[in-house]
Length: 539
Image (tube, rainbow, N blue to C red):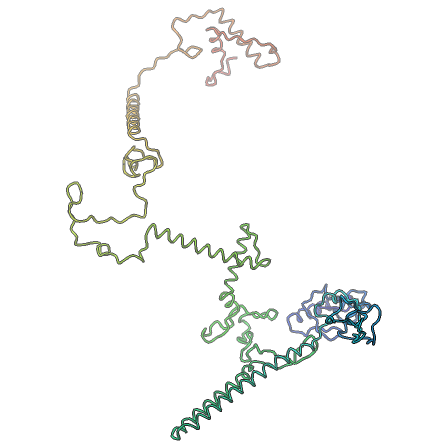
């Protein structure tokens, strides 16, 4: 809403102002008028409708949104077409050599080239044209209808009206000639048939008159009224597009709890009469039209454009609608082709029961009177073998070099391959060698199990052996030198002290890899046994 000036308002005045604006937007209060008496749209934002403070506007107005200061140098007038300013009697120096006018030269002359120009004949001198120069503003330079005279279109209307009048006159003359011809033929007929002929002539006359007035009856849906045109008010023809017997959608159901009607957009999405007979009501809500007809096609086109854009296609429904529609059409064609190819592939593989002939009796009832004889080996001697129904699964398909199918062998509650006796589905066939290896492994496992059971039943006495320090059995004849053993113990103590304090270790360390029996015995004696309960009391 436009405001005259910014002034301090109390809280109550401010609340009333807001309520008034809401009522105007809802259509409950009349719109505000500007200085010229025109209504101001209440939906215009305040930052657009409020006038600046320096304009000192006394009343609300929207003039500050337009260019209200006009430049006096600019003009809206146009050229005076065909105006002449001076008619000379003889040729003047510098004038056109063809017509004798001073306002242009011979190259720019628009008259028919004369055999002898006015410069030499000094006759029929053309008058000088009126030369005008205008300084137009920005809109005037870009106005394509600038200088257009609306009265010139009256000639076009007159020409078309004259053509219509001539056409009607010609049609009427043709009908009159036809009537005269029929009258002449009626006079030559017999007197007994006069009554019948008069009736037929009257009928023909009625039909002809109806044809003559047919052109006038075509304009029954037109209403003559005054319309606004470029050159001012003129009488025009406006078609009456609305049937006056129709009822407005917001008057179909006056219940307050019925379908909501939005006066701004003039839309009522829900059905105002959901309980009425669908054959009698002509309006079922805007959603009915959104979910039927070309609205669904347009919605599918938008969805396809969005999905194509998400997948990387450079397509936009608003920027390039023709491109999006062409892409959607090609997509539907490709989709139908792919569906047809899939259908043909399935029919080629499994067949089409709908196109086949009538099924035989033995397939429909599961029995037949045909006799088939077999020998002891199962071969057919007489008759024809009954064809077994095919399974939907693949049959007799051998994988991974197997010669039999999975499930041809059973052992220990497990399925397997008979060719290699393996119970793993995706295993590779090993043939007879694999069977022999499996049997050998099975025999070895059985022998080990039997040996283990026998050992648990009668355990053999275990002799305690003193193990050597280097991991072998201590020989019975091993003799240790006591002196060397004492030296080895000292060396072992020194080595452990060096390990604890690395600062005492020399730079050049010489390693001796000759280990004697005394050294190993000293290492064993000094070694800490973590499982020994008395290890804390050794040192």
